[in-house]
Length: 337
Image (cartoon, rainbow, N blue to C red; front, side, top):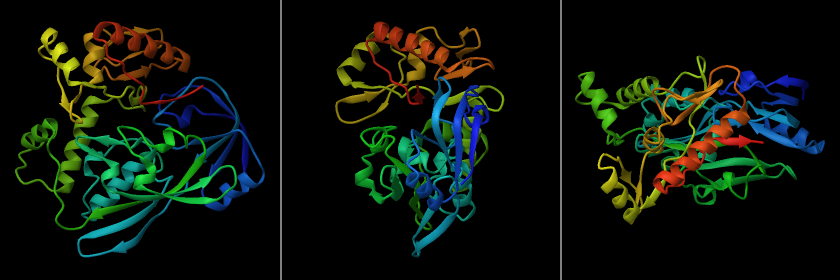
């Protein structure tokens, strides 16, 4: 185990925030993690791909960079394949691995940044699919006593961009491996989102396969979301709010064009990006932070912005939308303070 000191985290967060870690440890195996726990090092911060985190200042203690890799087939039938992936694997690379083998189930989640270990924490989703639909279980190490626990789908308590790891288990476990069950045969493609249908039509594809859907999703994401390598961001900053149907119908009277998506009975999901744009924030810039000109759901760092400035902007957006629409929106990004 190698401990590095006073390490810049700018290369390790897609917002590109120039903050430092007091101590930095790369974890590439369960054994290394157990060594850290045995030494009683604390406080511990767990960092995956850094694509869904906002760093607001230098971090004391120990940053554990999850770099546990490997993809192993653990069970196979004529219809399905169950695979265990290291939590440090890059999620998009895992998706490409599945597509190259004709395995269906995660093609709609192509190009989502981050690691495999972060996928269940956030219950990542896009274009009508969430990772929980193919999730089997995960292995995690208790950071207090080093014991291993296997979390079933039920124990993860998945919700919309939510899980037990963002609630009472937050900061208590280090995810090491995640197991998914993917379809070899009889997979039903999910092309219900209009953008996918339009992209496939644009390409002249009438009978798409898994790779076609993934390519369409990749094209859509690249056209809508800024590349973190060019401008600092963490993708969608806010969750899409779910409101009561009565509230939605009232809003629709005032804003007939308001878009919506199905939710649980009696509720409607509306796009946070639409609310932000309607509130006048799309494309605004305050110093070196702002709201992206093409996608109002994305807050950006133009180079020298700080996490605290992003937080202030996000709070202004949240308060304005609450006053204007009586709708509360909450951050999807994890804010480290």
